[in-house]
Image (tube, rainbow, N blue to C red; front, top):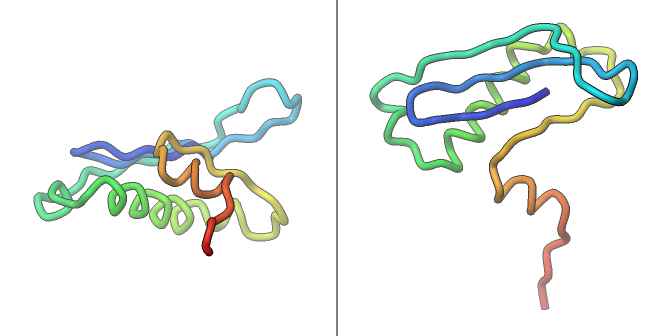
Length: 87
């Protein structure tokens, strides 16, 4: 899944990768944000798009043991690749 959020809308693409070279799109989804959600912080909008696509594409994902979600949100991609350093 590829997911992204902007100030006005959220969107995603569910794809499959049979050749391990490029993702082949299966379905696209997008949603306009209302005026209240326009004021959300970036972290909240990016979390919103992840919840939205998991709910929207759940019938495609059920039964799959593994799937990947790609996003351009720096904090999420950094935090999933690094361990928390606590003293």
